[in-house]
Structure formats: C-alpha cells, structure tokens
Length: 186
Image (cartoon, rainbow, N blue to C red):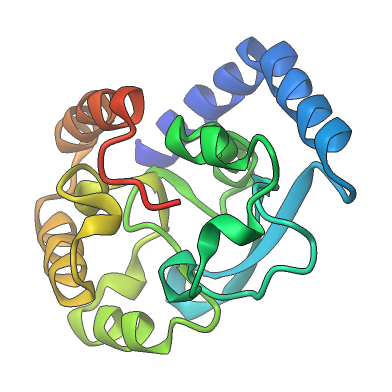
C-alpha cells in the first residue's frame, strides 16, 4: 500500500509541479555555471548507494560533505542557494527518486555516502531496512538542529510506528517547517 501511495502521489506531484520545476531549473542554470541538478550519492535501503537528485544550491567546486561540516557554508552557495534550501525547493527533484523506488515520501532522510557514523547507528537500529524519505519523523522533530544519535532514535521510532496514517501525519506536519524554513541550516 505504501509503495502504491508513493508512486501515485509522486507521479501526480511531478505532473502538477512540472512548470515550477522547470522554472527553478532555469534560475539555477542562469545564476551559476554548472548543471541545474546535483546528483548526490546517498545511502538507501539495505545501505545500497543510489544517486539522489536535488536542485544545485552549491557551487560545482564545493566539497562533498554535509553542510554543517563546512567552515563557511555561505561561501559555497549559489545566488539562489539559500532561498532554495530555506524553502526546501531544492528537494523537489527527489520526487523522481520516489517514483523509481529509490526513496519513499516518508522515511529517514538518506545519509550522504560519507556519513559513516550515521549509517552505522542506523544499521545497528535496523533503520537501514527502510527506504529513505523525502521527509521523515526526524525531519519534523528538529531537522538539521538535532544530534545524530537523536535522529537515529527518531528514525528507529518511525520504524516501530510506521503505517499509512503515521505517514500522512508526518506529511501534514512537514508543511509548517517547510513553510517557515525552521530547522534548516544553510
């Protein structure tokens, strides 16, 4: 049931958002050199790597590390980068990953390929059995502001409680943090 919901919802969203997606892609391309999309290597279900698309918010020469590990993240942002991150518009191409089955609408956010500490803790908690999500329980309970151990605890709680109603609750609760930009580090 969850996979069917993911396919129908992501397919419909991609169709409805086609024009805004093309507009964002054009803005990214026109304001900085490089492609509109950045394909990030992420850890998926069963700790398999997959390529996850995002609108590019960083310069093409930015280091491939989590933003909080950069000394001066603002230095690497493209002109629309801060806005795209604050509004989560940079995440919209992940609907493609949901459609093809690499991700789900709701699940733990996919770790970067080099976030070994996060991957190890998730594996220990059994969270690696889940498809990563565009949004998740940890996302709506602190996003970038919570420590890795707390994220994993929330991901493990999601693993125990998962179901269609809980997913719908998380999707609805995602609206406020996205609308306000709460919990987002540049």
